[in-house]
Length: 168
Image 1: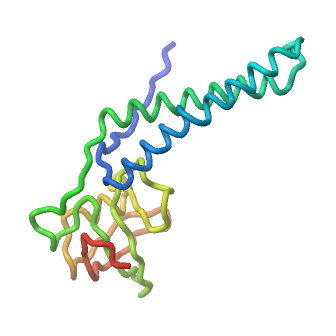
Image 2 (image 1 turned 90 degrees about the horizontal axis):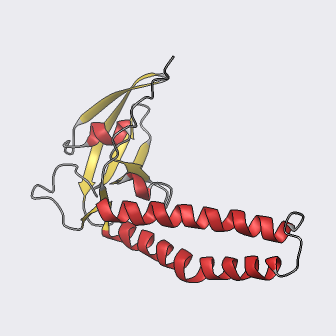
């Protein structure tokens, strides 16, 4: 009896220059600051003797594994990412890195920036180009309507504005 694995969803390999800098800074901090500090604390805890009941040693080793796992992930992702730092040839359409102002079917306005999946959660108002709304917005221009299926039914959004410079 075999267990079928579902294929992982395809993830975009695009990132903004700001997002790439944040990932590199995180990698540098983990490698140059955090890891040496945790390694030293594990070494100090190991010197105290019995490691089987030494909570500082056990926690330190666990934290070290977490840091190493994140360092590996960041290193691999940074190798394959493509930095998008120039606006597209048609700035009236929504592409990667665009700041969009949309209005939902209830008349409520929302401001989003289309970014890569590695940048989600860094700032409010970021939406992944891989998200259903992000995919639906790609290629649209101002005064366009976008409809997508949501768990609550079909929803509509109207594109009010498209920019590639930070509107704030």
